[in-house]
Length: 138
Image 1 (cartoon, rainbow, N blue to C red):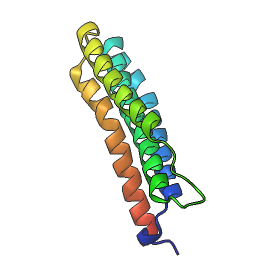
Image 2: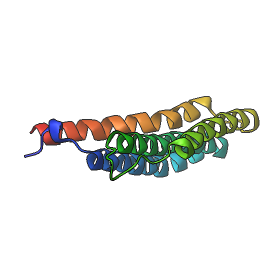
Image 3: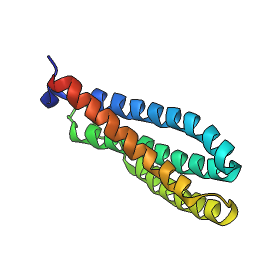
Image 4: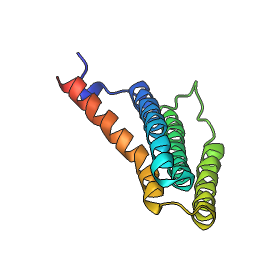
């Protein structure tokens, strides 16, 4: 029987992947509807927000994987360097800020669609987390 105390790194990895899949499904359903009702600019802003949100989830998973590997260091397994992952994390943050700025300046769509796209990652992670808690405590 699974308990939350036995939640492993592999479980966390699968949780992030399912959250990313849920973000993708939500975008595939919502973007055409927004395009039809509010125009292509609003659909593009939703896609931009969702892409930034999904890249944040992916980068968070990479960062946590490296941190967990560094915590499990043994003499036979030296720690892996964290520099590349940290550089990637901050580079993604900078790119996300630039993409947000450019999309708000150039694309004349609904800012609410951008905000909704940015919230999709959090929403998907929350849904998958609740699903796991219900599954494992049942």
